Image (spheres, rainbow over the protein chains, first blue to last red):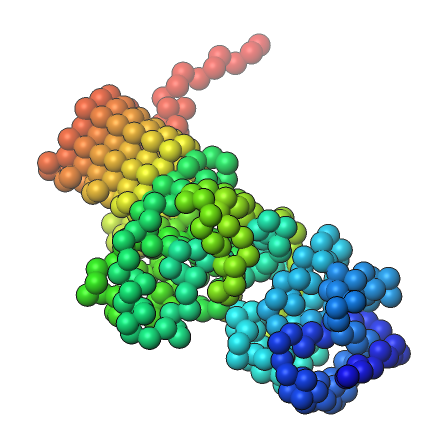
Length: 293
Length: 129
């Protein structure tokens, strides 16, 4: 069993939460050694704590608060960061992120952290941006949610599967916006964006500092146009498709069809009906130069 | 000005697609482009673009409006109102500047002029002695 050192160094400002996730033990050990070397090199060492079955994310965030840490650095995957955001609640931590497997992390792309070295440099540089946080059924997030066909990762689906998915007939979706109006649309699916992993010509969309969510819904597309637009759909740039629907709001209730799955990075997080809303909390985060917003 | 409005329409913050039906009040702080159906009030301080396929059964309040579709309801804009060739408006309109293109259909009352004009022409209050 790997023992993670729990050191309270002279500079206890940084509290590192380590989550191996589904990473194999040898790979995790290798990444951890590399990480510790880099942290030492940039003189940003701190206290380390590893998530285990007995020490949950929430427990470790409580420990960080009890120790008086002002900065929590999440070393893990996208799920780990989302769990930390949920556990932080209204407490005022500065949060940093070091993705242990940046290639499989959407949040790494959003926050501009393409590799371990850049992530550590970013933490050392402390470029701080306040980011909106949103919730769906008590799960906090800074990224985006998908429903309908957009839950599929089109960058990895083959031509036949892509054709099958995008040539489906449209579903009737019902959403309630800001408790003010009900929107029904015949569409294939959509996104609820706080931020996203691609930049777009439309800078106003998916800006996690504007205090709004953006709901994008895609209508049916002609069978001949499927491959023309596959790339845009894979990147979540639905506003560039023909006949887009774009709604800026603070709250969206996903009402019908009941039972439809809502995913985050392809993983189910809720089912219709569900409420997605801005929390009103601005989370201070350390971000990289190459962030998407 | 028209080019600017085209650009605003393309970059509208709220876009209601052709297959969308909205029931209730659509409020926005930015530009709105509507291609679908709206039953309820449409309100923004910025620009509203009502596309050819749009059908609005509601009052529209906006900074400027360009209409190519159908509106059954009153339109109140503080700036320019443009009724394009395919526009069909049934209701009263109030605006500062109105342009009606050939083929547009408008049934209702029209009042024009800015608040500034109104105050300019209003009688001066008598000085108190």
